[in-house]
Image (cartoon, rainbow, N blue to C red; front, side):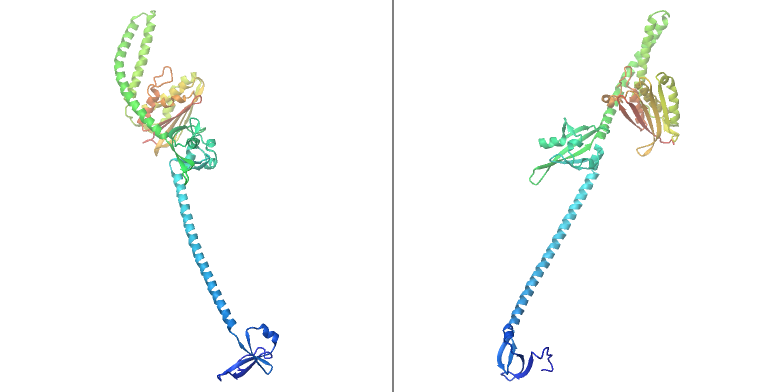
Length: 457
C-alpha cells in the first residue's frame, strides 16, 4: 500500500495495513494525536488510541450532505437558467412582434402619406385648438403656402378660409356642425379660385371631438367649363335669333336708305332738310353695318386654310392704324418672333381677329399709351402653335364685366355694338385655338390668343 499511495506529509499521516473483523485487509490512516486539531475536524471519526497514535476513518455524512446540497443547487440553477431561457425566448417573440407591429405601422404611415400627397384634392386637418396638423401637396398648390409655414400654426392666422367672416375650422368646432359648400378664395398674388369644401370631425375612442379635417377641391376650371358651355348655348340661341331679326330688318333698311337718298338728292344744296336726310342715311348705314356683323356672327363660315406670314399681316394692320394712333399719342410696340415664318389658317378671319382686338385696345386708351403686340412659338394641346399677345395700357376691364366680355351685344362703350369680341371668340374657336384675357381696372388688358400652326413652319 505504501508503494501505491503518494504520501504528501509522511510526518503527520501514516498508513498501516491491517484486517477488519471479517478478516479482510484494510488500510488504516494513522495520524499523531492532537486533541485541539481533532476537535476542529468533525469529519474525522475518533477511534480507540493505540500506541500514542489516533486511528481514524473517513466519515462520509458531511460528504453526502454536501452532495445533496450540490444537487439542490444544480437543480435550482438549472431551473433559473431554464426560466431565463424561456423568458429570453418570450422577450425575443415580443420584440419580434413589436418590430412587426412597428414595421406595419410605419408602412401604413408611409402609404397614408403617399396617398395624401398624390391626391388631387387638398386635405387639411386641425386639432381641437385650431392648430394645423395636416397640409398636403395640393393644399400648398391651392393656397400658395409651404407646409413648413403653416404646420402647428393657428388656421385663422395663415389661411383665408372664411364663411361670412368666420374661419371655417373654428366655425365647425364651435357649432359642432360639418360644412359642405363653395367659397371664393382671393389671396394676394394668387388667381381667384372657387373651392368646394367638405369637413368632417376627428374623434377619439370616447367619441370626443379632437379636431376637424377638410377635403377641398378646386372647382375653378369646372366652373369655367360650365360657364363656357353656357356661353356656347347663349351664343347659339342669340345667333339664331339675331339672324332672324337681321333678315327682317335688312329689307326695310334698304328701302329707308333708298328713299332717304332719293329725297336728299332732290333737295337743293341750300335746303336745311338736306342735312337731316344725310343724318338719316348715316344712321341707316350704321344699322346696316350692324346687321352685317350680326349675320357674320350668326353664320360663321368654316375657315379657308392657307399659308401666310402672321408677322407680315400684323405689320400691315399696324400701318392701317398709323394715323389713328398718332392722333391719340399711342405707340405700337411690335415684338415679332423671327422663328415664326408661316401659319396655316384663314387669313381674312385672322385679320378680323387682330383688327377687332386692336380696335378694342385703341378705344381703351383715352390718350397717350402703348399697345404691345408679340408673337412667339408655343404648344397647344401638345401640338405646335403660335402665341399672339396683344397688351394695352388702357383703362382695363371692371371685374363685374369680366365674365361677359365675349357675350354678344355686351359693350361698355356708348356706341359699341357688343359684337367685336364675340366674333373674335368664335373665330378663334373655329380655328381650334384658345383665347385668354387678363385685366385689372386702371392697369390695362392683355389678350393671349393661341392658334394652331398646322401646316405652317
